[in-house]
Image 1 (tube, one colour):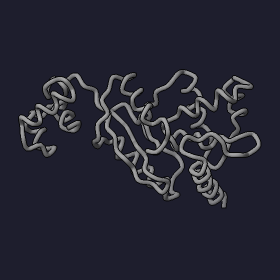
Image 2: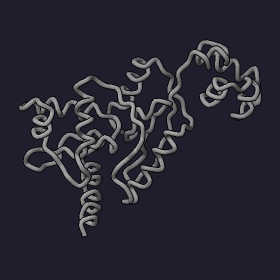
Image 3: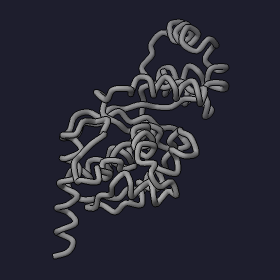
Image 4: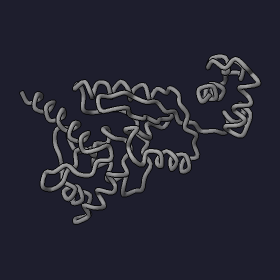
Amino acid sequence: MGMALKNIGTGDRVTEAQFAQGFESASGFRDAVQRLFGAPPKSAAANTRLLFAERITTPLGRILAVAGDDGLHILDFVDRRGLERKLIALRQRLKVTVVPGSHPVLTATADQMKAYFAGERTAFDLPLAPTGSAWEHAAWDHLRSIPPGTTESYGTMANALGRPGAARAVGRANGMNYISIIIPCHRVIAADGNLTGYGGGLWRKQWLLSPEQKLKGNARK
């Protein structure tokens, strides 16, 4: 239904969009759109901002990816605690409707995730659209500057952000990152070298760090 509304919004007739997405009943399609979006198809298409969601299968479990024309909003493991609350907050903050469907950003994300887990890449060139405070954005920008195959402590990251002693604030900002792997909060560890604080689970954090270290080692040979 989300794809049908997208087609209507780009100029398709309602019946063309309806049949293109597999809806056989015109009245059933119109009624369903009215119930979900509170408006008939043309009005819903004109006034509803849509984000599209797909699940990506990885060696570490399924990942939920949510994206729109402005970029990737969410990329995180489906069993992560707090993911449902993040989706609700995203809908409320951006006034969007999240629907299952395809999108070029999602296609590119799936392709680059496949290459990452195959050990073929550690850098990404996807448009990102994370939502957060100015402090959180500063922390996430810094995370993206940590090279693959390296780690950094929370204290070191706090110093780099101009807030010495704010390791806990760094940890909280990293914990609000819902674009995992691409914004690599898994590369931040405790000062003593222990792995701490990863929403996807410490076993995933260990897994993500291991192939990056190996890829870095191979690049040096």
